[in-house]
Length: 562
Ligand code: NOJ
Image (cartoon, rainbow, N blue to C red):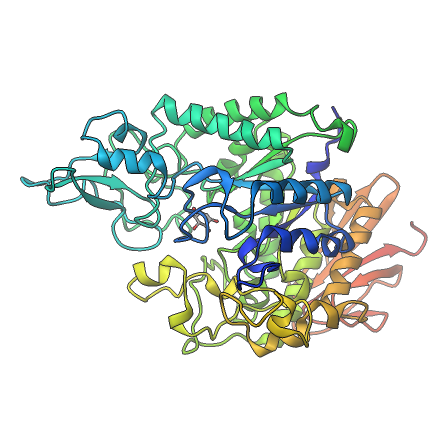
């Protein structure tokens, strides 16, 4: 086993399979499409890919509603296609992490169908969270919890005899019933699912809703005035319950059993990893997920939600590094994913402290400043990729893709749009299929014109073939950053702050062995003179040699350094 394993500084690229590449031309991305485009990721310079779900699913929540955890949905291909993808990725030196969705299944899962057909109190119902309603006729839900997508978190069933019956809990869509993690059978099932995919050769798992599996005993009412993204100290009864950590200790021991299995592919650096999707704050609470005997990584969503304001970023970086150092884990940075407004658009709005997660954007909402957003996004990425630890990229950010803010409302598929009573436009805007070739139908996403969400004209000039080899393009910037990050071992470095550059600047040095890299991000409105002992290695924007323009990050070395 490696003493300095790969995941501690890995850059991992998220693929949302529906929107990456479509080989069969049905307008929906698929596994053969992904396999055919893996060279793009090798050339980008990432270490691994994370695949969002490709399992059998009615696709009510983009595949996060899983009906069979051990098989591929025909929309995406077959188990043979995933084997081929794994094989090709491994040959290209790319690890593959898959999504594990343990909080809930689809309502079409065999277990849930059996639960509906069985009586209250039966073992079939005990795999999910079924409860009687409140009120004389059970006419009110068992508690006041609300779904993350809007509306109540409980749905009442019709019992097999035709009468209105119990309620089941769903923290997300009504077609995503929550499992009951007090039931040993659920534990056994997920341990077996982990082994199924480990045996197939995956390099790890991203754990969906990792902070939600265990609910407070007795399912007490929640204080609905609390927004967990804003109030980070009050524990809600459905999130971050202490019992989740026992589950992760057990899973860690399972994946560790497999850490020698892929030595023929990776030599002694063959750890399989677990990464938590846990919207938990403060950083100290989040770091509990990455204690040495738990998960390897946990997305730093506090950083993702930090506005483009120097003081906020300095605080967020220092605070999150300290939290993970306390438990001996690396930090896991991220700016975009399939659930949030793309950072090239988030940063195109006026920035203010305490930004929460933004709802989706529609054509009649205020629009972002696209040019400003892209300039800041490039600077933000250059800042993030300089930080010690691991980083996740979301497909299309290497092209500088903006959020698609003018999707027709009738094209929207995210359940948030309907469930919120059309108050949250949801996440479709960051899920629009990728542009590969500016002049091809569907911009090269598939062989024909079809794409499950309409692509805007602005995607043409951003297509991979327009940016490949084009000096100054966002794609070339990402390639350069990733190459330098690797050659200067920055992900393994130590960070020391450089003071005295002014309030609007984030500046630090990353030291790794003999190599020192100075990183300066100028978030102010005026040019920043570059100290004259520095030689710029890469700049997120233009720079004329001795000045760092506004909204620009540079990496530099000292004149006599390496
Ligand atoms: C988090 C996933 O990232 C999101 O896309 C999904 O809707 C929820 N979990 C529910 O599975």
